[in-house]
Amino acid sequence: MITSRKLDLYPILWRLPLLVWQGLFFVVPLAFMAAMSFWLVKNYRMEPAFVFDNWSRMLGRGAFWDAYWLTLGRAALAGVLATVIAFPASLFLSFRLSESARRFALLCLIVPFFTSFLVRAYAWQVILAESGPVNAVLGAAGLGPFTMLNSGFGAMVGYLTLVLPLVVIFQTWSLAAIDKNLIEAAGNLGAAPLRVLGSVIIPAAKTGLVLGAVFAFIMTFGDFVSPFYLGGSKPPTLTILIIDTTKSGQQWPRAAVVAIVMILTLFAVATAALKAAYGRRG
Image (cartoon, rainbow, N blue to C red):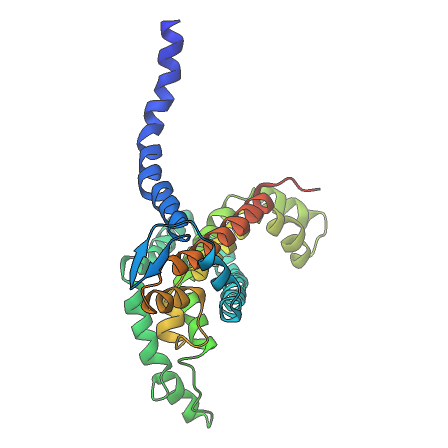
């Protein structure tokens, strides 16, 4: 009996720090934010209450739903574009480089995360400006100048800058783990390269492809820097709407409503993505 109890307590003790951390810094703040969404603001001060006024006001506004669908659409587009753009690079890293060269390449992909994303966004402001180098090159070819900043294009450039390295890493790990014998067997059976890609490589790397896309979606859905500094903040995304709401009469409870809707959306997308990534093929 004593031995059995020790064996039961052993994994619990190892999990306890993680459970305490998640409870203090995720569950408790999330519960507080959910409770705060029912509070009222009077004379620029929050007062505890339990009313649905904030929910009805925010969910009943057309501006909220415009921002929601814009944010959702941009995040989905960023996930698709990042997946498509990263795939050729991931194929090259997985099948054309040696293991040591691949490790070095992945290290280089991690290096951008050592710097602040805000600094990279400011760099893109210089590059995409009407008098910047991109328009200078296009002007030499008789094109432009084009307005790339303060637009959806500028925001998308920022999104891809944020997520592309991570998507390449996810895809490379998944592609490098594929059994090369399966690819050789498909080639020996007469399958064309495109057939091997569609029937063997992509299904075998499905987990990495889906996880890379969903992480790109999650990061861009909650990004504030790209739509604000590169997209011009108009039309506003949900993150910009949160800032505008808090500045408008200190309406933190209404901003909490927006944040909770974002969290619920991300939970739904992440759950569906995990089911698609790890679910059994029919």
